Image 1 (cartoon, chains in turn red, green):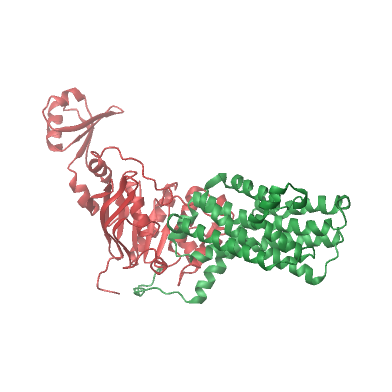
Image 2: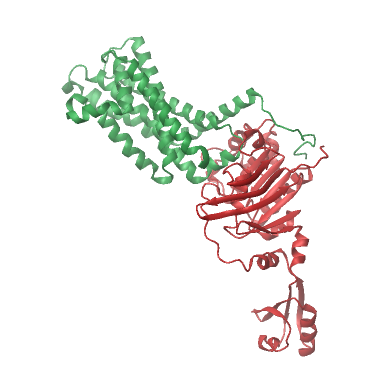
Length: 310
Length: 262
């Protein structure tokens, strides 16, 4: 193994404009070997543009874009990557095995198709035409196509959309296995629990900029909010009179849900005010809350024309 | 289960020519397979010229004079080989740009030439099918007397004649996108066939149409096909050059259009 750590993929000050709209405002992003990086952000944040640059689908208006130190538009760089794109509709009349074989033919040293079908859990689908498969099954075929070429870096764009819980779990297991064997992964997802389950590092983008970068834990720690839930006779009006810093109060099925940075104070006052408090739960914010918090103050973002890139 | 041997940290990844060749072949095989499984595309392309020939070249031939079956073999051969190029490239590229398949293929390490090669092989095969059906009908049903050399020349001319229309199809597919493509391409295909004298001999059409005819690539292919069946005026080189020029020009325009945006 190579011990000098060169980034596998790199954006340095990358700028991309679509007419008047700036999709990326000098984005810096580095992916290290063997790392799983999750790219998160609301729609229009520039995730798709960032991926499009790294895949060589579009050219940056400024800054540098590198894949294994090369221009991603060079095919030699792309022979080292695997790609799963959310929006691609594949040739419906081709069978699963034919699609995987075709993709394998693009790579210098692909794995045996049988092996990949097994890894992706689609052995039983091998002879089915792609168009006959369910959405989740199609995603698994696309995953097989992404990894058949033994790529050193895999791009997974919303890999588990349309999958049931079991398929999702088994795809996660396959992704973990890839990473364990040294493959780098760039993941974009709307499922924050997916990022939480898989990512070494999470980058949050808003309006063409990186607003946060770090491990899942580090990201969570940035958000001090805690949620307190319980069944109580205390009303939200009473809570407001306590003078504690409370962000949000919701009533869900007779249960009070309080989001606050002063959980200890809230609990103390609650127990004092209502000795009959039941089913008390105190949760530290998850990635989902952290994400909401980080992106909250960003105003509406106009649509980016990314049809060809998506 | 080992997915990737750890020893793969090579500085650049080269691909031996034999494997690049395999990518071309795999792409061609996929294109052919997928269209063979789409009768909705294949049957009209194969049968439309055959039905026309059956009507006008076989059943109604005698009212059109003794040379009509021979003349119409050339015309419908031209008409028939335009379609696989125009539709095979044009419609499929327009749809594949719309569905994101092109985007995926551009992100994958597919050699760009393999994509064109695959579609070209498909168009050549379909065109050969059209030709074989028409020649079979001309010989068997319309009793056109053709020497073996003439049969081969028609086949050769018309099959290679697919190329300018592949090139035009590629340009159209690069300009239009999505479900509207078949309609737009028919709006070019059908009038161009008419204006080139593929349905009615040019001599029967108004003189402005006759004078305009040489701007259509199909006019030149028809002239070559007529020569091949022994009806032309013997002039070939200029038509070949015009068709080659069209192929290169359409291809260059399409390449420019596709370079950045897919």
